[in-house]
Length: 116
Image (tube, rainbow, N blue to C red):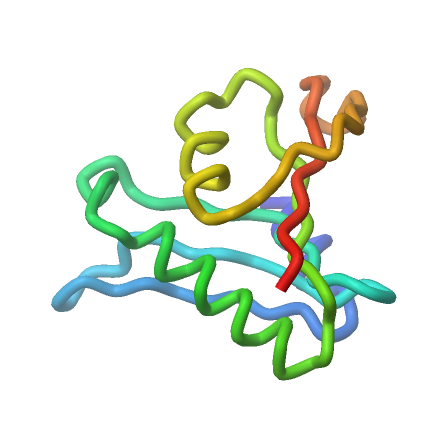
């Protein structure tokens, strides 16, 4: 929760929720940066994996980026999260080869970018 709260306090941040019938099944949290829209979180409940929820949330983020005149979507993903990497790759994100150690999670992350 602290990471989500920290990102929600950023100017222009948005939380986009995904709902199936009467249940919330996923969300994405993003905020504009100087040139890009940065996605901080994309989460989908396991019961909804493979149903297109993540793709729909990414489309929503991309539409918001366009409305702000941003040139790309960017995000950092845990280096060994193969499921997430597959979702982002199918959505058109490219690996920038930049890596970092996340100071809060102590995980190696890599930066992905999608030109829009």
